[in-house]
Length: 341
Image 1 (spheres, rainbow, N blue to C red):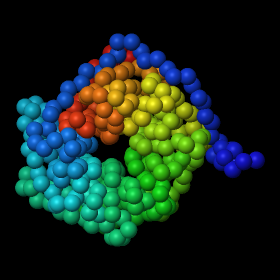
Image 2 (cartoon, rainbow, N blue to C red; image 1 turned 180 degrees about the horizontal axis):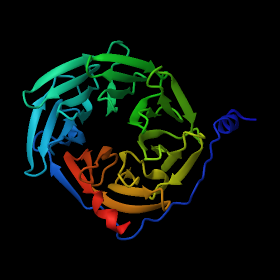
Image 3 (tube, rainbow, N blue to C red; image 1 turned 30 degrees about the vertical axis):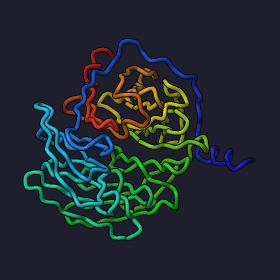
Image 4 (spheres, one colour; image 1 turned 135 degrees about the vertical axis):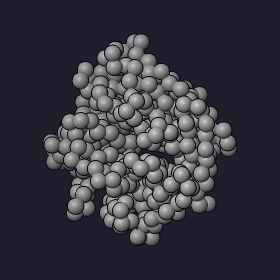
């Protein structure tokens, strides 16, 4: 028996290779984008997050800034961060404080937008140089990935204490979400695995995907605690059942060259992804697990590859937020599709 087959049997993985599906007709998510008024698309404005007051914060990854957009007026405000930070991702807590990952200076920062004050939380291990994606848990603490460092961490926001777990060389922890029990799940983008970590022991467990070429980049979770991921290299939406380890693969609408990247689930448990087909533009598509079909689509931005890298769904408004490599911050009103579903 081959090693690959042995792994499939061990984890009870099931691969269902479906033909490329058709999208439902007429279900288009209306979108709106704002051009960031300074710098250029090379600043890579990305990873917007809605604050409690309705303002939207985002990072300028290569521009070394945090910024705020008031979507009611279109007004932008910029906050400078330390040179060489290269902030990669941010999240906003209930007090309106902005937490961001210092992807090139090995720290997590906290910005108070009212005063501009920054508090810095350096990594306790010099091997962890690149905090990547952040997510809050139910206690207001933060779980995060560190891609090139091969690490996952936990920041206790009250004390600043950071715990780390290492996942191995070249594993590349990437997207991260928490299930309903507060357990983190994350992609190991350098491998054919999805992983989880015990919040108390920091022990990491991995689930091997049905094809050794599979590379999950972003990740989502639905209300039933099913884990979803976008297979960036092969053009599939993946469904992992943590109870059994079984994996189902669903072909992306644009097929094997779709490069699914940005990803989020909404309050209807629909899975939203961006397809980034080179030279054909970026398209937002949605999969409904209840009907087992692709149900919506919308064109985003101009023709380019890898335009939308991360997305955030705001449950309060039904808006899906994203940043693009075209130098814009945008949103799609996926709540308008509720009556059509």
